[in-house]
Length: 260
Image 1: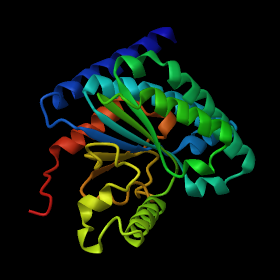
Image 2: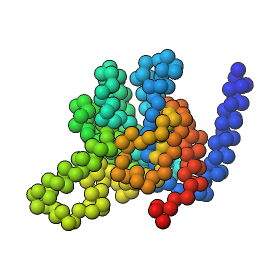
Image 3: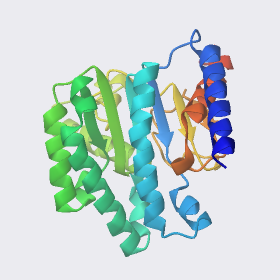
Image 4: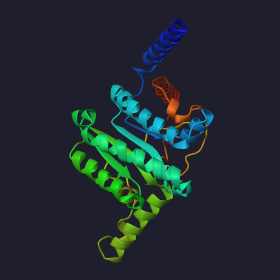
């Protein structure tokens, strides 16, 4: 049994190295966004409670941070919890919030975050989250506010339509108060009021969705206009480095024309 296990590990490492050789000299990605889908189905398939899938998925995020650092990806945006997810079973939602609290508490002292100068930001309607979680998010954002080497965004209590509505309302209020003229409003101005406005590069080069589903589900609706989309038939808790490398390889072989 051990011999078979070691053989599988060896094959995995060979495949990983082969993928790395394929992508290392290709176009580099600055911004990767991921819809981390399939936590509940992963747990169901193993006859476990749904929140255990969310816990395993949260652990996978920690591995992802190391992989993106290794690949030199400066911007990472993760779709972790949508505004629609609040309609799930209250016990499941509560467990997700507890998992998030533990992970944000860990981020405060995570050596990688401070060594790599990672600017951590939660994008979404944070006011909808439990107060304890809001306070932790505030502490993490405050502790990393002056970092700008890398950016890590968690889309939490997030909805793409909500983001556009919130930006529109803020702009309308500024027009009403005479702080902004209607004729001054263009795409560049509008982007200054999106949740992602703190980043110099808001648009993802690549959006990955796991679990086999092929839709954006309201994720970064404005920012994704020219993003490449890759859908992987793997549940998020089982997401591996080779899956990330495969997605990047797919990105690199596509011809990006941007309407030309």
